[in-house]
Length: 433
Ligand code: ZN
Image (cartoon, rainbow, N blue to C red; front, side):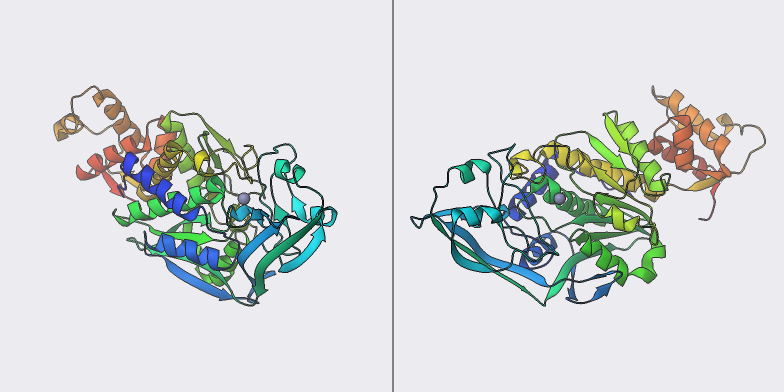
């Protein structure tokens, strides 16, 4: 697998996709998700699934579908002071329909602000508790005059479907790498659109590359979407050998990797090897049962080796779940870097294998096989020679190339390239997986 990307083009494509998706009022169900998936399907061959309301999924039930056509508040003079048209954050997600006139004092009970970030609109949901509400900036609320306000939420909450998107890129083997991202937040850029953009471009790059593993990309509403997918694919989970949740991958902060529940799964080691080799600062988090859909993939009965790649963790940047998480907050460099790292992790997983040294009694004579010439006489040749000795020494059938890369401190790509040379010269044989 040699998926590579051209950074400037791909960064502008990711930013363009995010800009197209930004205004859409998404939630965990409804036409906002459909519109989002239809746009992604214009980029990659996405299968779109519709699961009916009421379908039992483990301990949950697929909820009623929520759609919204309009939401606004008009002040005593009739001027619309809040309008969904201006920001999809203005309405609490899953708000029930309402049309009434009420005094400001009563309306305030249905208004959410962020007092310590008075210029920003918060993001609020009420999926499983029937209510309605609006979100606005504290400054705007403070400026509202007393009087009677007309409020309108033209929404529907009725039997329908939960919608998710899925792409399977078949490889040489049926064993799979799972890549999952959420599609349920309204106009929030890093916490949603970044994961969609990076996953879409990763799928595009992998489509164009030879692949040992099959790659499955999921675009799901958070929590209920992952639970629904897992419940519908329970018999299939044994094929998933590695997985990554992509979330919050577009801010300018450093990369963070959150380990799977297993803690030392191959994906955990591959991710940390890639981050260490990048030369840039990074953070590693131990698994904890909160966050994004790694919570579901790593629940005890599922326990898939799925880690989470992000940049600044959720809740640790002030823009998180506010109107500050907008397109200006997205960094083209951050998106590109996250994409490159995601693909590099996939590359390690795809190429990692175990070899057996066929001449294990003392060192084989490298010179007579022309191996010094094969690895070149450049300034890297000494490093290549050392890599060769490490590969020969540890290829006892019990150590993978990733084991060798970790122990030698030499980049996986170099170890893997040298193993290929040694294999060509009949000094190594692959151990069947
Ligand atoms: Zn979120």
